[in-house]
Length: 478
Image 1: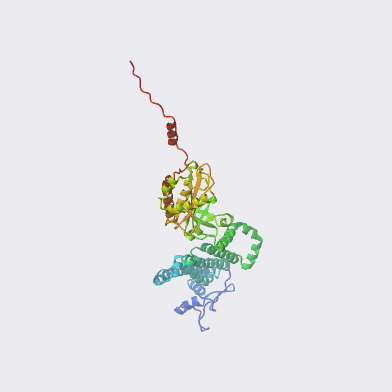
Image 2: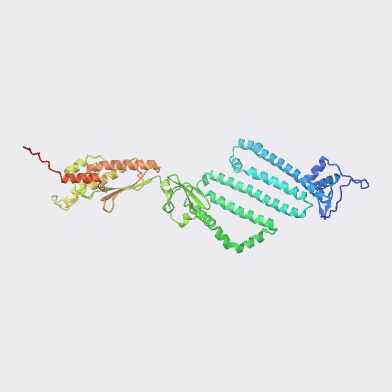
């Protein structure tokens, strides 16, 4: 059992009989403002607060002494403190959710709305509660020194968590404000905030260990040097993601909203979010793909931002011409094709060039391969280019050409390489389809055929044409 050495409150007149002072309003003010002043009792050499002394004296008046009086005093003060903290918590919630909210709704600024959306007021009210609890709760258990140490450490840890909650809510608010800012709308803001959050968690962990052990935070940091290899292994992805986020941002490799393509990971769509550890991409089929951030540095990817910024989207598609249908054109066929408005200037210019060349070199026109002549494939290629130039949906300031590729088993590829004026997917597909619809229909005017593999109907038709069975007249049977 503890040995207690107790000195009661005495009146100002030292010669008067010992009596307990009746508490007044000034006494309660003194309890919460000057808890550590000299009106006190000594318990095993420790100085108590005024509020504990008052409850202890009150317990003695009802006939409770020694250790039981201390337990009763502490229990009573715990209940009173709990009720007081509940009342204070209710008051703070009412103050923030009712009074402060009214001013926020009336304000024209946006940042205060972000603060409340991230629940800064809740963490701030917890901080105030714990700060007040730290002022008087340890004094309640003054008669139990072993428990005071545990309570002090517990309140210190709770205070660290409260400060962390406020700081983390402020970081989230800063993130939301930066996201809505035009200058940061395409920047990996989440990565920067997550780096600060990780640093904040590390500081919180260090302070908690320091409170529990009673040692300086610096001594804990020094001891971490020996465990650096383990930490590097545990936080490998975080470190790689942090470095990748910085390099991606510094090099402006990708931004939020960019269309990227990474076939290795099945990525083909717009970037939704760039975090410290991963990148979220929404594919065109509305599926979500998550890849590690450092893969943007370790693997190659295609970014279509340049296409979107240029204002044009590339058409690169070929028409396979059946080579056996390519031939020279006669004068009559040339005159017929000259009626095509888009070809008239080209044919007239080419006729003059051919005539001048053949006359100068004394070419014998009776042999077709002598000299220069027009071919149906050449005029068709010229027609495609003229058609693209006059098309209002084709970008005239970007590359525009019609070229022949190397022949293969499917014929002669005649490739269209040009850009549309818009980058929207539907506009691009409609423009390209309209062009090829027209060309597939116009190719017959040049006596050319598009190559395609034979189907079963083509084979049957070919066989029927070569082996038509003869129909014999029926003989009369007598």
